[in-house]
Length: 86
Image (cartoon, rainbow, N blue to C red; front, top):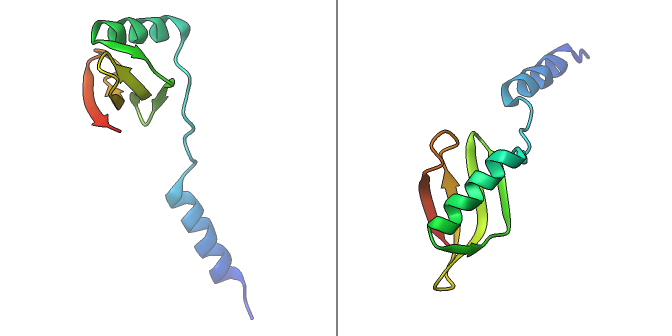
């Protein structure tokens, strides 16, 4: 019994899936800019700001009316491109 086909299949799967990308913290200067934008947009607090899959994600942002959102911002323009109500 040969294990070569199984080993080759496992290597192929590993190469296709690639490494899992972890969420990244923003540099302090960019973090400050994002927080400034959030305040200007009327958000009073938020749980976490991180870079994930090429977008800035803000978890559990609370607006002035107490509504909670998950946000995505364009990392180049810092424009809010997606708001998902929680």
